[in-house]
Amino acid sequence: MVIPLSKPDISTLEKKYVLEALDSGQLSFGPKLKRFEESFCRRFNVLYALAMNSGTSALHIAVKTLGLSAGDEIITTPFSFIASSNCFVYEGVRPSFVDIDPRTLNMDVSQIEQAITSKTKAILVVHLFGQPCDMDPILSVAKKHNLFVIEDACEAIGSKWKGKSVGTLGDVGVFAFYPNKQLTTGEGGMLITNNWRVYELASSLRNQGRGLNSGWLNHEVIGYNYRMSDLQAAVGLAQMERLTEMLKKREDVAGHYLELIGQYGLPISTPFIHPHCTMSWFVFIVILPKGADRKKIMDFLMQKGIQTRPYFPAIHLQQSYINRFAFCKGDFPITEEMAERTLAIPFYNQLSATEQKYVVEQLAFALVREDNNG
Image 1 (spheres, rainbow, N blue to C red):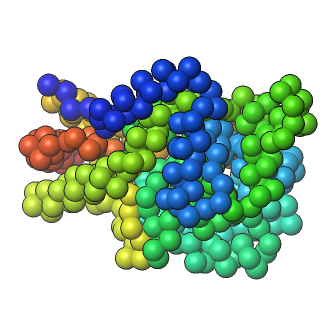
Image 2: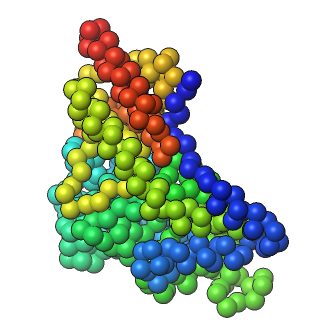
Image 3: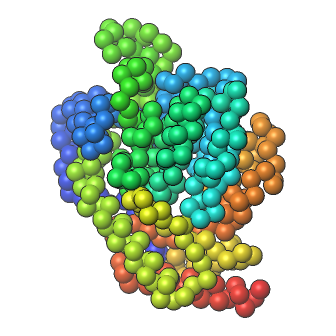
């Protein structure tokens, strides 16, 4: 038996909608895409939603629509999936990293203002692992310095900050639908905004630069093929209709993990959940004790049929970023420490209480072995 790290939650509804899309004969820009986008507008109470072929594509389009370009700087976190920074690097924008809060693992908001320079044009907020950032000071600093706010909510669909959905608090919000996400389309992403100019340009850029009202092969700007197919949208539409149910399942699984960790008295911690937020659980992260050999723990768990992964490596220490920006070890010490201590354990909607108990028991054994060997 192997307990996987993640598993998508696919029901008969997704299969039904995919077959309907296939039978329609309209596999691109079909009715399912329109309904999927409309479902986002209703759910998040925004004017515009644009589905794309990945969260990375949606982030890239967000950068383009806000006019960020070579020589500009963006303030963001070095502790995230690399796409959140790559989307700026594509356009020659330099990521200006600030270190993270060791409790939440999100960007340390107290460091943002001191990182602002004359070249700073935006703040990219990453709601890491489904945990909303502390948005009040971020929005205040952005307003004071006339900066755009892009919300990378790729891991946080359904999360709320003080009752407001993440993705709706800044100028542009982006979600992603990889198979391990709370909502999946296999691959896919969504950009949401209330800004008509952003929506109009984003619509064109995702479709090879064609304008909303231009002719079939008239291309007004240099664009991309970032379109989502109607098959992907069909899966997404079904998932949106089930989203509340699926988020509740994840909340229950996370809650049971927290209970078990407390019952077993494991010498680990989990990211602090701010009382003002509603967390939408993307993955379940544990923070190992200082000095623990994570690889040995992972190897032991794999021998017991339990998949785990480190989440996330520090972006600034990726070789491509060292080569391009001359970052080095020690630049962001809290990020670097947490990148060595964080571990994702199996987490998905269908994970049973029995499987969770087994995971925590084996993690306890692994930690005891590690402590004895240390």
